[in-house]
Length: 390
Image 1 (cartoon, helix red, strand yellow):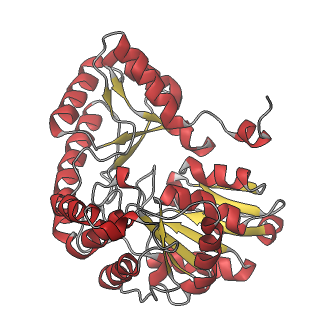
Image 2 (tube, rainbow, N blue to C red):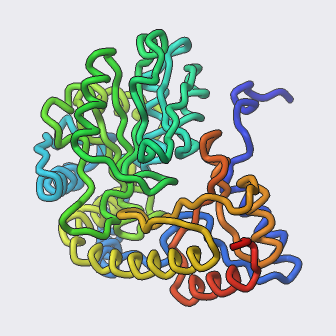
């Protein structure tokens, strides 16, 4: 039996491949400390779990949910954006519930792009950006994120003929995998570029609540005047409330683009379980204190791991946001060579930067989502391995 040619466009999914390698090592009896996948190791906020228990018991929540999301969840999402970012959104047509931001990121490509269009995407970046373009038949054009440019794309380096064919652009700040942040001046520049070439900006804002300086909170692109003319933003409940398995997020912003994705989704899914939306609304309304406590834990882990890396000769500045560290590979090793060497010698697994794109080569990513004692053990193992010549 032959299957769709689309499947031939897919390289082995990075995290699935890392899981396979990890499983093989564990089957051989190795104790693997995986610092690869960014899945918070904490349980979901207790008050959210309690809200979910009550919501599940309601018979009215057992039916199909509204395609666009419940009015309660969309209003809670709009209220959160007003409180957190100062952004005013109409819950009726500027907020859409998603089954996690991953599906929204993939499906907005199908709703916006046609064969022959160009999608601009950050490299290194979340692999789904590029896959979304491929599945829609569009051409993906990478925007390099380089250290010398603070891991921000340089729009002046996008060729004129590419910019004129571009129909959509993904941005992601705070950034995965580089942990870089963006300010409002950068977003203003992005919006000017998008308006000039009639490009829809799709901002992936999954990590905005994982920051370590109260006086320098990551902004939303929607905070910029006129942003809603050309931009939408994905906001996920996964990272701030430890709800990765719950699969709930939102698309917010430009009503036309929100409607386009909503129309597409009506024909391929039946929405997010109403009880999950009810619990999600509680998280958005009551979760600020919970998030603040999580930030303290991640900051402590960040500092500990940065000190450990520096003691091995790997220089890294502590990032101001996200729970990732993006570090250069030592000794001239490639990303994959370093990852495999580290795993073989220490049982510590990190993510090779090359898995996030060609401009990720020469780096590796560490996720700080494991419990403190495992972070401590990973640091000690890496020190003893003597992988770095000082």
